[in-house]
Every structure is written in structure tokens, then in C-alpha cells.
Length: 423
Ligand SMILES: *[C@@H]1O[C@H](CO)[C@@H](O)[C@H](O)[C@H]1NC(C)=O
Ligand SMILES: *[C@@H]1O[C@H](CO)[C@@H](O)[C@H](O)[C@H]1NC(C)=O
Ligand SMILES: CC(=O)N[C@H]1CO[C@H](CO)[C@@H](O)[C@@H]1O
Image 1 (cartoon, rainbow, N blue to C red):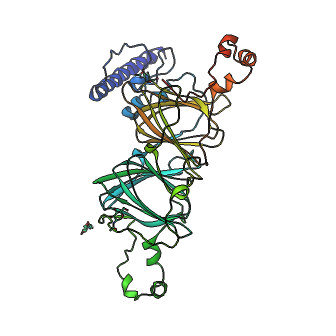
Image 2 (cartoon, protein in one colour):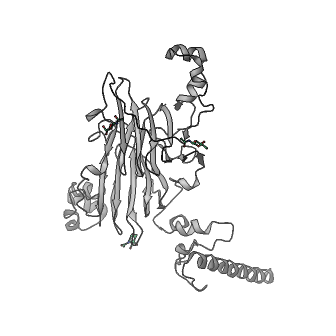
Image 3 (cartoon, protein in one colour):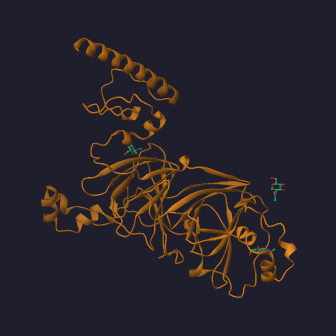
């Protein structure tokens, strides 16, 4: 028994050093510092679940080392994490990309991220002239242009219409059922799409014009338009969804109910407005909800830039689950869901996430150099949060001091203003 134990240990050590040399090679490829195998500190940033304090052991089985290195918090880096907390994150890079003539689409729906109960989303790309065919949805659609420019066109139940060119930072909101289409205007154009329903691929959610006409008796279509049935001989079947085309040069005029403008407008030009005051000086924070964009009644958003070293202060949202899209940079967030349960996540560009309704959290920049840019979405008519600091500052200081076992002078000096983004 003892002998086989020694052999076992030797065998293990051999496997372990073999593993470490594979690890070192992988690190060399990744350009990381290759450390001696005698390193005794925490190994999380090297992709190993070892805390350097007696807990953990090397990963010997199949693993994706690049993902491990990028997600040290999944390896147990935060000793304050506790319990079984589900995954709140989905990478667009893990989505199936659907290719079309002149573009592509990749989605995140409830089947991808079951923790997102309110929202589904997609990235969509349209080359110059490419058209997302005319359609409507059973759900509301929200879009944010982050590359190039697009033409949007919509018609509502009163026969009001809107045709507008949108650029970087511009947002559209089409209420449930509103007819619309989108066309790429620049050479390459891309945008984020958000829907106020998590099950976006469910049958009965999207209605495309070609699909409808192709599945309606030809004589009825002809009678409806008062035209010869042969006019519709070339309606594409199956419908293309996205297809290449030429940039629109026609204007819509003389609609009997006029244009959708002012409070009825489906467009909000984010960067033409002032961001929210950020006393903490950590970045910029735009709020886009029904208080400044009246059409946007079911989706409320923020567009946030956080400087390196910045922190989106600890807070929760009293009104909704939070959905996130990380556009640039690197982030870390710990989500506290009550009952001593918490889990920390590492995020990079292209990640989406859903934080449970009312869960406590922060978002921190983890890059030394790069700004962190993200979008938050709530299925609500407004953005609302309660910061931890403000809560404590507006509660009798002696109650706070006794509860947290902190000096009363500290409790008395807590900042009463929201700081939002702290530098
Ligand atoms: C779209 O692409 C097809 C080839 O795939 C081409 O024949 C057609 O001319 C293109 N249409 C436009 C408007 O670019
Ligand atoms: C369409 O409208 C735009 C902006 O109002 C105008 O500049 C353009 O000349 C119009 N084009 C046509 C074909 O009427
Ligand atoms: C430049 C800078 O301060 N970067 C910080 C970004 O956030 C991470 C995590 O808090 C810090 O470790 C970096 O120093």
C-alpha cells in the first residue's frame, strides 16, 4: 500500500510537471510570463484554480486554457464568492452566426442564456445597400448603431411614418407591432438589437412581408392590391430576411397622418443629449428611457463609459432585471443574490449578461488602459437604481454603525449623493 502510494505520488508529480510544461508552452504562445513551477502564490491569472493559501489544485483534464485565463473569477479567485449561483453570462462569440447576402446576424435568446427572463438580443451587420426585409414583431424592438449608419423606416397604427438616417450612438425603438425595415448606408454597418421578450425565436414573434405574401392565395393578394396576380410572381420564397440591395433614394411623402416626430418619434440621438451628472467622475453615463425618449415605454437603457480604474458603485435596481452588453474593454462584476450567495464574473467585449431582479452588484474596469463601454437594458419604462452608499448615508448613522460594526464618524460622513461612476 505504502509503496504504491509513493509510486502514485511520483506518477502524479510527473503528470503535474508535464501539465505545467504544457501550461508554460500555452502561456508562451499567449505571450504571458512563464513562471517557475515552484511558484506558490495564487495561480488564477495563469488559468489554474489554486489560491496559494492551501486551497485548490491544478487542472489536469480537458479545459480551454484561453477562457480560463480570461475568467480567473470562474476559477475561484474571489474568496467572497459563495454557493451555487447560475451563469449570468453569454458570449455572442458562442452564438451561431447566420449568413446572408450583404450581412449576418447572431442572437442571444433564452435558450442561450436562461437567466435572461425579460430580454433577448442580437448583433446585426448590413453592408451598403443591404436590407433587413420589411417586417413586424409581437415584441418591441430597440436598436443601437455602433458602426456605420443605417436608414430606418416605420409605420404605426395611425398611419404615421418615420424615415431617418441613424449614426453612431443613435437609438431606435419600435413598439410591439409597428411595421419597419432597416437598410445599411455606409460601407459596413452594425448595430445591437434588443427585444422586450426573452423567447425571440418562438413561432409567432416575427412576421416578414415576403413570407406573408408568399403564403396568401394569389388571387386574394391581387384583389387586395387591385392588381394583376402576375405582379407578384417574383416574391421571394423562402423569404430572405436580409438581402443585398441598392441604397434608397426615394422619400416618403403625403402620408394622411403625417410623420412620427417630437414625442411620437421612434428615434433618440443619444450623443446629441447631455449625459447624466456623474459626481464620482469615473466616466459618462447616458440614460435613455421614457422620461427623455417617450416612445420607449417598455425598454429603458443606459450607455456607459467607465475610465480605467473606475467603479460603477454598488447598487441594485428596484424595478427590473438588468440585461447587459459589453461593447469594449474588460470588466468584473460580483452579483449578490441574497442567502449568502454571490458570484463574480469577468466580462470582455461581445459578452452579454443578465443580473437577477433586485440583485446587488457593481461593475469594475479591469483594464489598465482601455475605457470600458457597455449598455444596460431594463424591461421597464425607466432606469432606476438604489446605491448602497446613499442608502446608508440617509439612514440614522448610529443604526448603520451598530449594524455594520463600523465607527459612527464613518457612518456620519458617508456621501449622500449618488456617485454613479467612481474614479
Ligand atoms: C445581389 O447579389 C447578386 C449575386 O449574389 C447579384 O446578382 C445582384 O446584382 C446583387 N444585387 C445588388 C442590388 O447588388
Ligand atoms: C428627400 O428628403 C431629403 C431630406 O428632407 C432631401 O434632402 C432630398 O432632396 C429628398 N429627396 C427627394 C428625391 O425628394
Ligand atoms: C489603470 C487602472 O487603475 N486600472 C485598474 C482597472 O481595474 C482593475 C481592477 O480593479 C485594477 O486592478 C486596475 O489597476
